[in-house]
Figure 1: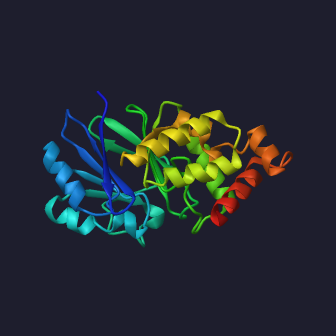
Figure 2 (figure 1 turned 120 degrees about the horizontal axis):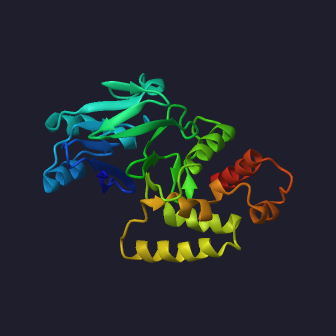
Figure 3 (figure 1 turned 120 degrees about the vertical axis):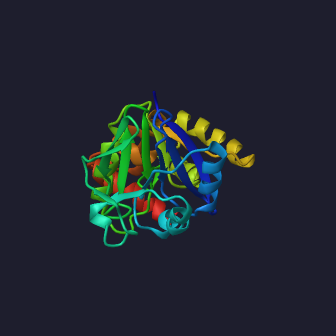
Length: 255
């Protein structure tokens, strides 16, 4: 049995997720930008919330937690490194720890860069990866606290997972990310096709996440620092992968 996944739009451009194990009834919410859409989805599905995962401390990922817990008490899980600025945690985790939802364990991965305490969680049995603001669809999070080298290392860990992994990121930024990606990787036909698909989806109000890791590896410039075409386009033939990533991130910050 695999876990059921529901994607929930929140606020202007955030996403929360529900992960449900039918056999046990365990239900995990991943991030809580606001409570109301999550509460509505729990009611619609007839699911009982048992766990909440907070990927990092930014307000648009935790702001709805107290309202959610008021009517749906659950164990709150977050990074031990960020416990001092997260809402109160029941379970503080570090890289390598496992989060049990029903019969499946999710592996905690430390992904500093966007913030220094950011975590991702991978459920290999169901092929689900919750990345929030680390790896995003066609992008990565802005480096508010970490360094480019830290973020490159974080993304490299995520990129090494199986290609059919479903990447559940935290925002609907894909159209803007695609526009930038074309300035870095203009000759990538897969990127051009994906951009058309993204723009068509957004024109009808459809979400562009989750995506797959295989798709990200083929089209996301922040995972493609080793690509010869990107290196040639940037004039960085002999740079390290981390240096190429640093240049791409700097260009995105100015885009």
